[in-house]
Length: 293
Image 1 (cartoon, rainbow, N blue to C red):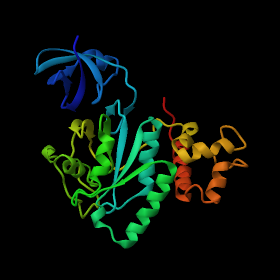
Image 2 (cartoon, rainbow, N blue to C red; image 1 turned 120 degrees about the vertical axis):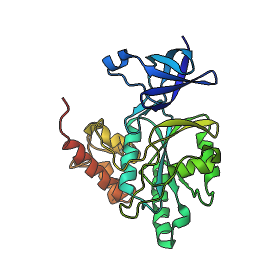
Image 3 (tube, one colour; image 1 turned 90 degrees about the horizontal axis):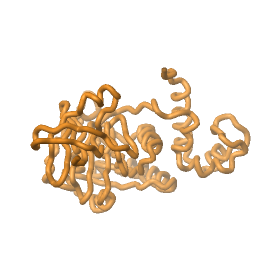
Image 4 (spheres, one colour; image 1 turned 180 degrees about the vertical axis):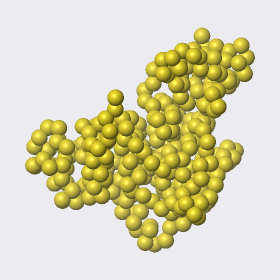
Protein backbone atom coordinates (compact mmCIF):
# COMPACT_ATOMS: atom_id res chain seq x y z
CA UNK A 1 0.00 0.00 0.00
CA UNK A 2 1.51 3.41 -0.96
CA UNK A 3 2.42 5.90 1.76
CA UNK A 4 2.65 9.65 1.61
CA UNK A 5 2.51 12.93 3.51
CA UNK A 6 -0.57 15.17 3.69
CA UNK A 7 0.49 18.53 2.29
CA UNK A 8 -2.86 20.34 2.34
CA UNK A 9 -6.38 19.87 3.70
CA UNK A 10 -9.17 21.80 2.04
CA UNK A 11 -12.94 21.37 1.73
CA UNK A 12 -12.91 17.73 2.83
CA UNK A 13 -10.05 16.74 0.55
CA UNK A 14 -6.53 15.75 1.59
CA UNK A 15 -3.67 16.28 -0.83
CA UNK A 16 -1.09 13.56 -0.32
CA UNK A 17 2.47 13.78 -1.67
CA UNK A 18 3.98 10.47 -2.73
CA UNK A 19 6.69 9.70 -5.31
CA UNK A 20 6.79 13.28 -6.61
CA UNK A 21 3.04 13.31 -7.24
CA UNK A 22 0.08 14.81 -5.39
CA UNK A 23 -3.00 12.65 -4.88
CA UNK A 24 -6.37 14.15 -4.00
CA UNK A 25 -7.89 11.91 -1.34
CA UNK A 26 -10.85 11.66 0.97
CA UNK A 27 -10.81 10.21 4.47
CA UNK A 28 -12.63 6.93 4.91
CA UNK A 29 -15.68 6.76 7.18
CA UNK A 30 -13.72 4.77 9.75
CA UNK A 31 -11.91 8.00 10.72
CA UNK A 32 -15.18 9.72 11.61
CA UNK A 33 -16.29 6.66 13.54
CA UNK A 34 -13.02 6.53 15.51
CA UNK A 35 -12.89 10.34 15.83
CA UNK A 36 -9.59 10.51 13.96
CA UNK A 37 -9.19 13.53 11.72
CA UNK A 38 -6.28 13.43 9.27
CA UNK A 39 -4.05 16.49 9.62
CA UNK A 40 -1.60 18.27 7.40
CA UNK A 41 1.78 16.74 8.21
CA UNK A 42 0.39 13.23 8.78
CA UNK A 43 2.12 10.26 7.21
CA UNK A 44 -0.64 8.08 5.79
CA UNK A 45 -1.39 4.93 3.84
CA UNK A 46 -3.71 5.51 0.90
CA UNK A 47 -5.08 3.95 -2.24
CA UNK A 48 -5.73 5.80 -5.48
CA UNK A 49 -6.74 4.73 -8.97
CA UNK A 50 -5.55 8.08 -10.26
CA UNK A 51 -4.36 11.44 -8.92
CA UNK A 52 -7.91 12.74 -8.39
CA UNK A 53 -9.62 9.75 -6.76
CA UNK A 54 -7.93 8.45 -3.65
CA UNK A 55 -8.80 7.36 -0.12
CA UNK A 56 -6.74 7.60 3.05
CA UNK A 57 -6.75 4.20 4.74
CA UNK A 58 -4.57 4.74 7.80
CA UNK A 59 -2.86 7.56 9.70
CA UNK A 60 0.57 6.72 11.09
CA UNK A 61 1.47 7.54 14.68
CA UNK A 62 2.17 11.22 15.24
CA UNK A 63 5.10 12.59 17.21
CA UNK A 64 3.05 15.70 18.04
CA UNK A 65 0.05 17.71 16.89
CA UNK A 66 -1.35 21.20 17.26
CA UNK A 67 -5.01 22.17 17.40
CA UNK A 68 -4.70 25.75 16.12
CA UNK A 69 -3.24 25.55 13.55
CA UNK A 70 -4.29 21.92 12.90
CA UNK A 71 -1.04 20.22 11.91
CA UNK A 72 1.07 17.25 13.02
CA UNK A 73 4.68 16.04 13.09
CA UNK A 74 6.15 19.50 13.47
CA UNK A 75 9.89 19.90 14.10
CA UNK A 76 9.85 23.58 15.00
CA UNK A 77 7.60 26.61 15.24
CA UNK A 78 8.60 29.97 13.78
CA UNK A 79 6.65 32.19 16.17
CA UNK A 80 6.23 35.43 14.27
CA UNK A 81 5.59 38.81 15.87
CA UNK A 82 5.80 42.26 14.34
CA UNK A 83 7.50 45.27 15.88
CA UNK A 84 4.52 47.45 14.95
CA UNK A 85 1.19 47.08 13.15
CA UNK A 86 0.29 45.16 15.29
CA UNK A 87 2.62 46.13 18.12
CA UNK A 88 4.80 43.54 19.84
CA UNK A 89 2.94 41.78 22.66
CA UNK A 90 5.02 39.83 25.17
CA UNK A 91 1.96 38.28 26.85
CA UNK A 92 0.79 36.79 23.57
CA UNK A 93 4.33 35.69 22.72
CA UNK A 94 4.54 33.80 26.01
CA UNK A 95 1.15 32.17 25.34
CA UNK A 96 2.54 30.88 22.05
CA UNK A 97 5.74 29.73 23.70
CA UNK A 98 3.91 27.84 26.46
CA UNK A 99 1.76 25.99 23.93
CA UNK A 100 4.76 25.14 21.75
CA UNK A 101 6.85 24.03 24.74
CA UNK A 102 3.98 21.81 25.95
CA UNK A 103 4.14 19.95 22.62
CA UNK A 104 7.93 19.53 22.79
CA UNK A 105 8.33 21.55 19.61
CA UNK A 106 11.40 23.74 19.20
CA UNK A 107 10.42 27.44 19.03
CA UNK A 108 12.18 30.13 17.03
CA UNK A 109 11.10 33.74 17.67
CA UNK A 110 10.98 35.80 14.49
CA UNK A 111 10.37 39.55 14.71
CA UNK A 112 9.09 41.20 11.52
CA UNK A 113 8.70 44.75 10.17
CA UNK A 114 11.94 45.96 11.77
CA UNK A 115 11.96 48.73 9.15
CA UNK A 116 9.04 50.41 10.99
CA UNK A 117 10.64 50.89 14.41
CA UNK A 118 11.76 54.13 15.98
CA UNK A 119 14.58 54.50 18.52
CA UNK A 120 12.47 53.96 21.65
CA UNK A 121 10.76 50.89 20.23
CA UNK A 122 14.13 49.53 19.15
CA UNK A 123 15.50 49.87 22.69
CA UNK A 124 12.49 48.04 24.10
CA UNK A 125 12.87 45.23 21.56
CA UNK A 126 16.59 44.97 22.27
CA UNK A 127 15.80 44.35 25.94
CA UNK A 128 13.28 41.65 25.05
CA UNK A 129 15.81 40.09 22.69
CA UNK A 130 18.40 39.98 25.48
CA UNK A 131 15.90 38.41 27.90
CA UNK A 132 14.67 35.69 25.56
CA UNK A 133 18.12 34.84 24.25
CA UNK A 134 19.34 34.50 27.84
CA UNK A 135 16.56 31.97 28.43
CA UNK A 136 17.82 30.06 25.40
CA UNK A 137 15.40 31.05 22.67
CA UNK A 138 16.50 31.87 19.14
CA UNK A 139 15.49 35.47 18.32
CA UNK A 140 15.68 36.62 14.69
CA UNK A 141 14.84 40.13 13.43
CA UNK A 142 13.56 40.53 9.86
CA UNK A 143 12.03 42.90 7.36
CA UNK A 144 10.25 41.44 4.35
CA UNK A 145 10.15 44.88 2.74
CA UNK A 146 13.88 45.52 3.11
CA UNK A 147 14.88 41.83 2.81
CA UNK A 148 16.62 41.97 6.18
CA UNK A 149 17.37 38.92 8.31
CA UNK A 150 16.19 36.38 5.73
CA UNK A 151 19.66 34.86 5.49
CA UNK A 152 19.55 34.23 9.25
CA UNK A 153 16.13 32.56 9.09
CA UNK A 154 16.51 30.26 6.08
CA UNK A 155 19.12 27.91 7.65
CA UNK A 156 16.57 27.05 10.34
CA UNK A 157 14.15 25.79 7.68
CA UNK A 158 16.46 23.30 5.97
CA UNK A 159 15.34 19.66 6.24
CA UNK A 160 12.69 20.47 8.83
CA UNK A 161 8.90 20.71 8.98
CA UNK A 162 8.18 24.14 10.40
CA UNK A 163 4.95 25.87 11.31
CA UNK A 164 4.86 29.63 10.95
CA UNK A 165 2.47 30.88 13.60
CA UNK A 166 1.46 34.26 14.95
CA UNK A 167 -1.45 36.63 15.23
CA UNK A 168 -3.06 38.07 12.10
CA UNK A 169 -1.28 40.86 10.31
CA UNK A 170 2.27 40.26 11.55
CA UNK A 171 3.46 39.43 8.05
CA UNK A 172 3.78 35.64 7.99
CA UNK A 173 2.84 35.32 4.33
CA UNK A 174 4.96 38.34 3.39
CA UNK A 175 7.91 36.71 5.12
CA UNK A 176 7.51 33.48 3.17
CA UNK A 177 7.06 35.42 -0.08
CA UNK A 178 10.30 37.30 0.64
CA UNK A 179 12.16 34.00 1.09
CA UNK A 180 10.59 32.47 -2.02
CA UNK A 181 8.86 35.02 -4.30
CA UNK A 182 7.48 32.21 -6.50
CA UNK A 183 4.99 31.35 -3.74
CA UNK A 184 2.93 34.51 -4.36
CA UNK A 185 0.99 33.98 -1.13
CA UNK A 186 -1.85 36.43 -0.60
CA UNK A 187 -1.14 39.19 1.90
CA UNK A 188 -3.23 41.98 3.38
CA UNK A 189 -2.75 45.17 5.32
CA UNK A 190 -3.73 45.90 8.90
CA UNK A 191 -7.31 47.04 9.40
CA UNK A 192 -7.14 50.60 10.74
CA UNK A 193 -10.52 50.12 12.43
CA UNK A 194 -9.77 46.82 14.17
CA UNK A 195 -6.04 47.28 14.69
CA UNK A 196 -5.30 43.76 13.50
CA UNK A 197 -4.74 41.93 10.26
CA UNK A 198 -7.34 40.23 8.17
CA UNK A 199 -7.13 36.46 7.82
CA UNK A 200 -5.48 36.08 4.42
CA UNK A 201 -4.48 32.44 4.83
CA UNK A 202 -7.62 30.27 4.87
CA UNK A 203 -6.16 26.79 5.27
CA UNK A 204 -3.03 24.97 6.41
CA UNK A 205 -0.68 23.95 3.65
CA UNK A 206 2.88 22.62 3.65
CA UNK A 207 5.08 24.56 1.24
CA UNK A 208 8.50 23.55 -0.01
CA UNK A 209 10.84 26.35 1.08
CA UNK A 210 14.60 26.49 1.63
CA UNK A 211 14.98 22.69 1.37
CA UNK A 212 12.34 22.09 4.03
CA UNK A 213 8.59 22.15 4.54
CA UNK A 214 6.92 25.22 5.97
CA UNK A 215 3.25 25.47 6.93
CA UNK A 216 1.55 28.75 6.12
CA UNK A 217 -1.31 28.86 8.61
CA UNK A 218 -4.38 30.99 9.33
CA UNK A 219 -3.55 33.80 11.71
CA UNK A 220 -5.22 33.95 15.10
CA UNK A 221 -5.13 36.27 18.06
CA UNK A 222 -5.73 34.02 21.08
CA UNK A 223 -4.58 30.72 22.47
CA UNK A 224 -6.35 28.55 25.02
CA UNK A 225 -4.53 26.26 27.46
CA UNK A 226 -7.12 23.49 27.17
CA UNK A 227 -4.58 20.66 27.18
CA UNK A 228 -2.13 21.99 29.77
CA UNK A 229 -2.44 21.02 33.42
CA UNK A 230 -1.24 23.07 36.39
CA UNK A 231 1.60 20.67 37.14
CA UNK A 232 2.89 21.04 33.56
CA UNK A 233 2.84 24.82 33.29
CA UNK A 234 6.15 25.63 35.00
CA UNK A 235 7.99 23.16 32.75
CA UNK A 236 6.89 25.29 29.79
CA UNK A 237 9.06 28.11 31.16
CA UNK A 238 12.66 26.87 30.59
CA UNK A 239 14.19 29.34 33.04
CA UNK A 240 11.81 28.08 35.75
CA UNK A 241 12.72 24.48 35.00
CA UNK A 242 16.40 25.00 35.70
CA UNK A 243 15.82 27.20 38.77
CA UNK A 244 13.24 24.86 40.29
CA UNK A 245 15.94 22.27 40.98
CA UNK A 246 16.89 24.47 43.94
CA UNK A 247 13.35 24.88 45.28
CA UNK A 248 12.87 23.52 48.80
CA UNK A 249 9.80 21.48 47.84
CA UNK A 250 9.64 19.02 44.98
CA UNK A 251 6.70 19.87 42.74
CA UNK A 252 6.85 23.54 43.79
CA UNK A 253 4.30 25.62 41.87
CA UNK A 254 6.28 28.84 42.53
CA UNK A 255 3.27 30.52 44.06
CA UNK A 256 3.21 30.76 47.87
CA UNK A 257 5.71 28.05 48.75
CA UNK A 258 8.63 29.05 51.02
CA UNK A 259 12.22 29.01 49.76
CA UNK A 260 11.17 28.98 46.10
CA UNK A 261 14.19 29.39 43.82
CA UNK A 262 12.06 30.75 40.98
CA UNK A 263 10.68 33.61 43.09
CA UNK A 264 14.20 34.27 44.35
CA UNK A 265 15.40 34.41 40.74
CA UNK A 266 12.73 37.02 39.99
CA UNK A 267 13.74 39.09 43.02
CA UNK A 268 17.40 38.98 42.01
CA UNK A 269 16.66 39.88 38.40
CA UNK A 270 17.79 36.55 36.96
CA UNK A 271 14.26 35.80 35.73
CA UNK A 272 12.34 38.63 33.97
CA UNK A 273 9.54 39.81 36.24
CA UNK A 274 7.10 40.05 33.32
CA UNK A 275 7.65 36.37 32.52
CA UNK A 276 6.78 35.50 36.11
CA UNK A 277 3.68 37.71 36.00
CA UNK A 278 2.58 35.96 32.81
CA UNK A 279 3.12 32.64 34.55
CA UNK A 280 0.89 33.72 37.46
CA UNK A 281 -1.81 34.84 35.03
CA UNK A 282 -1.66 31.59 33.04
CA UNK A 283 -1.67 29.56 36.25
CA UNK A 284 -4.86 31.24 37.43
CA UNK A 285 -6.43 30.82 34.00
CA UNK A 286 -5.77 27.08 34.03
CA UNK A 287 -6.91 26.82 37.66
CA UNK A 288 -10.21 28.54 36.81
CA UNK A 289 -10.77 26.41 33.72
CA UNK A 290 -14.01 24.47 33.73
CA UNK A 291 -13.50 20.73 34.25
CA UNK A 292 -13.60 18.53 31.16
CA UNK A 293 -15.93 15.56 31.17
